[in-house]
Length: 357
Image 1 (cartoon, rainbow, N blue to C red):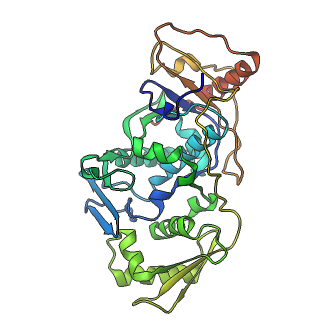
Image 2: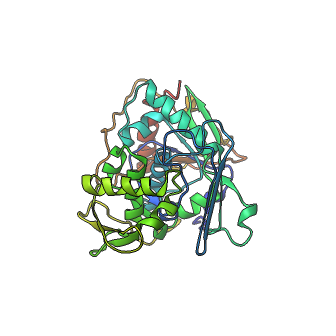
Image 3: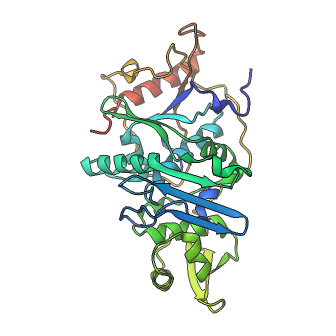
């Protein structure tokens, strides 16, 4: 029996990420101020309203709200979800992964600094409260959510977390996701990162690109920088031309000028507009008696699987082990081919299992 379209809502299901996947971003997050653009902790709320769109972001955490660098974790997870759906695999908003896998895919190093960076990102993502009327209905103010929840970090088990329904619904709809140029993760400045995502969202691969009023851009960014200083930084970015995949120029128009963004390469490919919520013939099911089985169950120290590092501009098959709570223990033997794939996935998990210190 094929699963229902909302199968990911099943509360006791979880998947373990072990393979590489092309990073993907969610359209709804790319053109509005959902994240802080600076590395200095921001506790000043974001209150954005324009036309029919409203976004409110709050954080009571001393470390401030989630930043545009922290969103890398969500981009990575979205890519894993889309890749799983592309290959007919079950997905779930309950996720488990090793920090090493994320480091490899995003091009981070694997030292102690990166573990602290990840821990800080997870803390801010889990303590940032968001309210928006985008896909939320008229009672959106009564439906706040955090970017992640139920976060657990351990040396043995790595990272386990839960994504919100709001984000999961978008990730499972290809019309709402866009692939991300791997070069994006090399951008150091918050405004540069925000500007790439804005251009990717609106200009995309359109031959004539897109135009933005500079004064409106300041409001869209949610930046605490004064408007004139913000526009000066935009103009400096235009001069440097450091945004991958797009050429920018400022022309006359409006009160402050108009920014033009035109695609320069095909590296920013989109994804198709259809996702079928089905289980493919090679989907891997491990049925257990608990939703949170220890990773000791999957360990195999004699074998080590080494992944190629870095993000490539192609899509890789993501090995995902899915399991759910049942009352009858382990059952239903799998065919030989899925069993081999399952064995490889287990061996992959056995390697690099060390979590955040």
